Structures are given as structure tokens and as C-alpha cells.
Length: 435
Ligand code: ATP
Ligand code: MG
Image 1 (cartoon, rainbow, N blue to C red):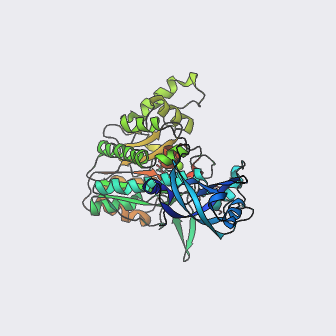
Image 2 (cartoon, helix red, strand yellow):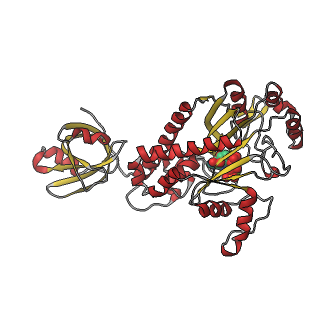
Image 3 (cartoon, rainbow, N blue to C red):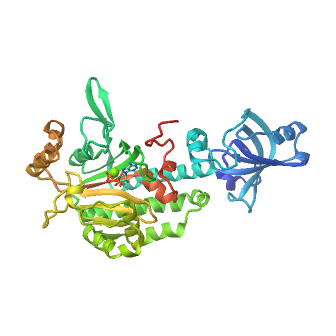
């Protein structure tokens, strides 16, 4: 029976076959300890000279890093290992040789590892991060399906640019300029007017010219859009959704969290305690009040937060924090104006604690056709590009809200990793387009 060792507990005492790669090895004259990985987990295989043929022992003793093997053996409990099980090997065949594998157990620099990303993905830490990424994606579909959303796909090649033109990747589309999508939102709004509650999930592209540990040039975004839903209800849904994905990772990926040494009491706290909701005004007042005790830059009403400001505010509350009602001048044209103030819009960013910064940007949408048309002109956008979007508010507009969660930001936050580049299998950044 060919298995993977994540199912070991069902096979204790039984003989199984496993396809694996050798990550490390240690041997004496009588016994060889093989560190193996089978794509699911990392585990130990033991080859005892007295129990196998001379050939098998000789082969085992000489295995080099990343050689692929087919091993047969008996599963046994091993309380000392992270996995709790090991394999007592009785037979072993080499499938593919591996000589001079570049990533050795010694320390390597990040650039070197990034240049070898196609191989680095095999390491237990990268594997754990990808398990968490996969869990978040799985739980996302589950959550939105349960809540009655349907997934609609927005185009990647577009003729317009709702988030402004400076961060756009332009390409040639049969002699016309086209842009790689920065967001699927406007299309999601069309979807919400057709199907009520929808979400898009796809790659988005931004020519981010600054090097930060939170920005990729290609990232995946989950963008729900909900007809008949106003801002407060949208915040409730955002909060339930983020709690849902954290809980899914806690429930189903304890192995990965353990490999990453993530502080799970903090994650559990984010699931159990309500998120904080503060206005932009209050956040600015708080930052100004605490300025002398901290080393972030002075901030004035009207400024956008830098990451030290976001870090301070969310750490101050110790839970993910919604900052609501930003000045209209620093937000996108499609956000709904505030009922009683004309300087702010009905929106919120969700800031993760522990320095992870903004993970969600969202708002109630402006549905007033005349006002929107004026905005399009004000923001220097063309009716040719945005006429279709204005149609949505012309034909049966309803209150609606939506938000965008950056997948890699969520992965970095939940995994507890330093830098967003490890949250993507093949990250794209200012200075990286390979492998
Ligand atoms: P920031 O201020 O951090 O650049 P933003 O205001 O540009 O974020 P939005 O346009 O609101 O972000 O995008 C929605 C979400 O997409 C963000 O909350 C974040 O999770 C994610 N996101 C935005 N830009 C990037 C990026 N360059 N790399 C990875 N994720 C991103
Ligand atoms: Mg940005």
C-alpha cells in the first residue's frame, strides 16, 4: 500500500510503501537515519543493517541530499519527533539521483534562496507556509459558499485603472494600451448587481516601486461585493471571514503552525475577541497623543498612515483593528461620501496587529450616478473607460459594499513570517522576475 506519512497513525505496525526525497542522512556502521519528505510531511526512516540486504544498506548509507527513493517499511510510533511516527525501512530503491544540491543544511542568504525558489519550496518552512496558504484559500471558498456568495472571475487584461495610473503595468493589446488588473472590484460590482453576493479571487498587479516587506508586484486578492449591504454589515462580514480563516488554520494546520513556531495563543485571541473599530479621526488623535513616547513620524489629519503608524495603532488595541472613514482625498473615487461630513468617505481598512499592517481595504460604494460621473471627471478618468461602470448606478442601483483581502498579506500574518515574499510560491517584486 503506497501512502504518505501524514496518514501514519492509521498504519502503525503495518508495512507500507512511500515515495520520498532524502533531505538529510546520518549513519554508522550498523544503522542509517534518513530524513525524508514525501510532499506532505517530513519524517525519519531508519535502516538497520542486520534487517536489510547488504545492497540496500550500502545504498542507504550513500544517499545524497534530494535523491528520490521508493521505500518500503513498517510504520512505528516515535514520540520524540514532531510528527510522532517514523518508518522502519526494509527495502529501498533509488528513483532519481541528485548530486550537488545547492541548498544545503547550512545558512544561505535570502537572495541565494530566492534565486533557487523552485528548490527552496521543498524546505519544511516553505512547505508549511504553502500549507497555510492553501488552507486559507480552501476556507475562503467554504466561507463564501456557506454565506451564499458565488465566485465570478474578473478580467486580468483591462482598459481602465481604478486605483490610479502610477502603479500600472501597461502592455500592448493589438496596438492599443491595455493594463494588468490592479483590482477586480468594478467587475465584482457588476456581478453583485447581477447575482446579489459575489466574490472574485485572482491575481492582481501593481508596479510597486518601493521595496517593503508587505508589497509584491503580483498578488492574489479576494474581493467580495454585496448588494443591499451597508458599511456596518460589511464590517461584520469582514470580521467573520477573517476569524473563519484564522480558525481554519488553527483547526487544520497545527502541524504547519508548529513548524513555523507561530504563537497560536495570539491567533486564538484574534478568533475569540472582537476586532476593534476606530475612526480615522480617533486614530490620528491617538497617534498625536502618543507621539512623544514613540518613534513614528508626526502625522496630521489628511495624511495616509505609514506602516509604523499602522503598527502602533493595531498593537495598541492588540487585535485586528478597523480604521474607518478616511479623508476622501486619499481614497478611491468609488467610495460613498459620509452622510453628514463632506471630508471623509464610508470606508475602512483592517489593520492586523504584530506589524503586519493593512490586510483589507473596503468601503460602501457611491451609487449616485450624477456624483459618480462628476468623480470620474474630477479624478481625470475617461467616460469611454468608465461608462460601463456608471451604467451600474444608472439602472437600478442599490446600496452595496465590498472589500479586498490580499491573500499574501493574510498568509504572512497568520503564518507569522517576516516578509511577504515567502507567502507566494513564486513572488514577483521590484527586482525579481525569476524563477
Ligand atoms: P497599501 O497601503 O499597503 O499599499 P493599498 O491601500 O494599496 O495597500 P488596497 O488598494 O486597499 O491596498 O488593496 C486591498 C488589499 O490588497 C490590501 O489591504 C492588501 O491586503 C493587498 N495589497 C495591496 N497592495 C499589495 C501589494 N503590493 N502586495 C501585496 N498585497 C497588497
Ligand atoms: Mg498600495
